[in-house]
Image (cartoon, rainbow, N blue to C red):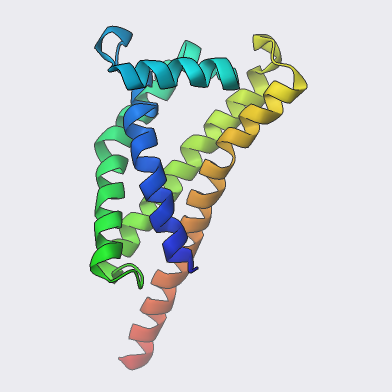
Length: 165
C-alpha cells in the first residue's frame, strides 16, 4: 500500500464523517437528518466529546471551513486518484494537499489542546480523556504528515526544474 492510497482511503472515510457527523456542529438539531441526530447522540454518549456538546464559536468556524473548502477537496482528491488509476495524485493537486494538510492538522491540534486543558473541567475520567485524545490524534497526525509529504514532493519538483534549466 502506498502513502497515496492511504490518503485516498482517508478521504473515502472522512467524507461521510464530515457530512454526517462534523456537519452537526453547525446544523441546528431540528434541521439535522435522522442519521446525523443518531450519530451525534452516539458520539457524545460514547466519546464524552464536550466540544460536540458546547460547540464553541471557533469550532463552528472550523467546521464551516471544513464543509465549504475541505469537503470539496476530498471529492477532488478521490476523483483524481481514481483518474490516475490508483497510481498517485497529479502534480496539480500537490499545493492543495499541502494547504489541506496544514489546515486540518492545525485545527485538530487546537482541538487537542482544548481537550487537554479543559477535560478535567468537564469531569472526564482518565479513560474518557485518553479515548477523546485517541479520537482526535489520528486526524491531526495524518494531515500534518500529508503536509510534510507534499512539501517534500513540491521541493523535489522545484529542484529538478532548477537542475534542468
